[in-house]
Image (cartoon, rainbow, N blue to C red; front, side, top):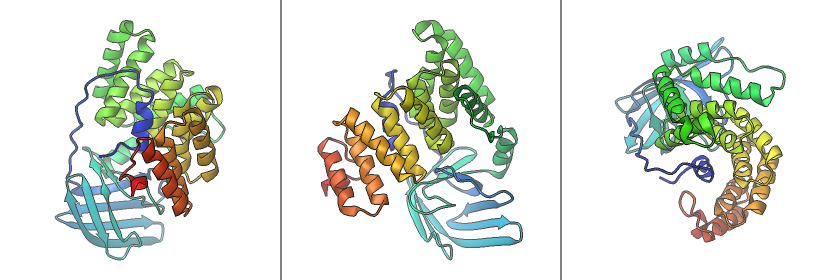
Length: 326
């Protein structure tokens, strides 16, 4: 599988080098799942509940809100990490792509609340209720960066993985003396490994702890934002990356990461500006040309997008299928 833009941007700043094993995913979506959010940050309206159930090749969807209930049925098939869903009446129609599942979370390859590319994150009803009960509310007034980082850490704690977090804390304290950056770098190093193994919740917590301890470290902040782009809040990721790019304007990976958040949030102007800054700092990096192609394609500029893909391919970045080489 081609690494996502998120993973590639993380790799550009990894400090630790090690041999990593693949995280074995559960490839059976059977069960009932409740929508947590789309990956661009959109969440169900207050009072509404959207559930999807997979069982024996049949899929059913139920969306309820005050005074209205919408249902649909269809079929699904799984081949490796690929899931294909055929909705009967819903305007989503046929959806196909890579999916993943853990014990209580399912990531599907389409947005539920919007159109276009992206994904959606679902949890078992019990796990989602437990998570939401612990999540701190986002203040209406603008947050300072330390306050935002503390809240982001609290959100990571709401997943309830107490045993794993305690083990991480023990390792960070035990290994702090091995790193020039002390305990913060010890948190960062294990978070980087966990991210690459696919343990995003633990990686989120590890990067958050590193950032809380060293709130001006561009590497820690960038990689915390990268993890939020996978399973957290795109708006929080964008806020962190705006701070990083304002204070460290000569680093290209944070500009690339900011472009990813802005693209997910459908802010074309922000995406273009961030990519132009990244390209100016690292013109040899085909990833930024590929991301520009994604933006142009989103804008309906197919010829310009293909030219950007070709430029990316010429620099050694092939994208999801060597778009620019066709």
